[in-house]
Length: 163
Image (cartoon, rainbow, N blue to C red):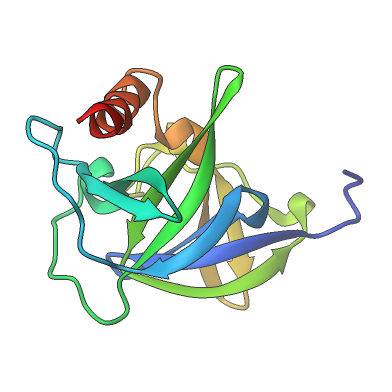
């Protein structure tokens, strides 16, 4: 993509911080339905939901990023995204405190992630964008889910299909 074209990002909040993911990764945004919990899953794995006949694991980004859990509110949403895993695409739902809007950011204006001062492990961060005077943490959603996390998510989906 030429650098003179802006990229669209879906912005959302976690713990009063603004985050963004490339809209190309986003399938849809949902209200939080009842989640089916799966025993023996790690804390970040909140359960699974049924989206038009497909079992989709739901991940708590707060838990994944080591943030304190809070009560869900009317603003809490699930961002359904496609995650690249080797040569496969895995669909996951990620809980967000609130979903804000789709914005455009010039890729050349995204600065590298600082090594200190963020609540999120910096390997997950593509960079820091700016909207007005606010900073927005741009996530690389594929890197949020390390390869050792993805088998857990795959297992949750597979065991739900076979039971």
